[in-house]
Image 1 (cartoon, helix red, strand yellow):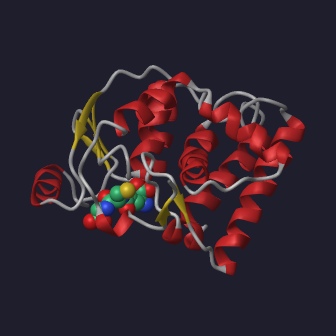
Image 2 (tube, helix red, strand yellow; image 1 turned 60 degrees about the horizontal axis):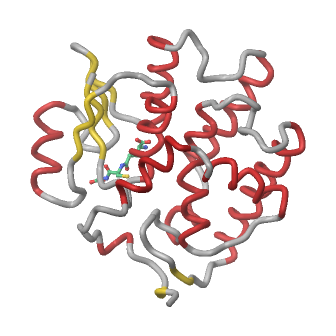
Length: 216
Ligand SMILES: N[C@@H](CCC(=O)N[C@@H](CS)C(=O)NCC(=O)O)C(=O)O
């Protein structure tokens, strides 16, 4: 199985699929392409209908979307272990995951993932509203599962929200203490730390993802 990803520093969608697969010890060959380069598009166009990362090849099958990759891994390799067991909780975890996949536009536009940077940003009201919703999700789930993953056990929902935790760190934004407790759980994860360490060795710059002012 081959997982195509972009720059670890910037590619938040790549992180979601990589994190899910790595956390569940799925064996895969990591194929990294540098965003915004001709090779990025030519290598992906050779293999996939859509030239975006993450993208997965498993035998004859190509899958080109982060959530679809997570769902495929859950179905094909994990006997559903990547979602909570109870039907009601699974529906909630899916709702939260879909909410990230299709929403939080202001937050995603204004606060690009840029792991190695420490920045200050002025946020729009729309981004502040997105952050308030993130706070609500994290703190509600922490009330139910203190010092743990969103649904107790690690699930696709945690993979979907990992980039936002990293963005909060880059832009030095604090959530409420309960929500912060979830961020601390995520940051303590050794698998995520592997991605972070590797992201810090990268030197390519994607100008469009450089936002805010350096904090010295
Ligand atoms: N909805 C897609 C979004 C994937 C996406 O936009 N990936 C970015 C990198 S993080 C990309 O490939 N950008 C290249 C481009 O759009 O040309 C997913 O969830 O996988």
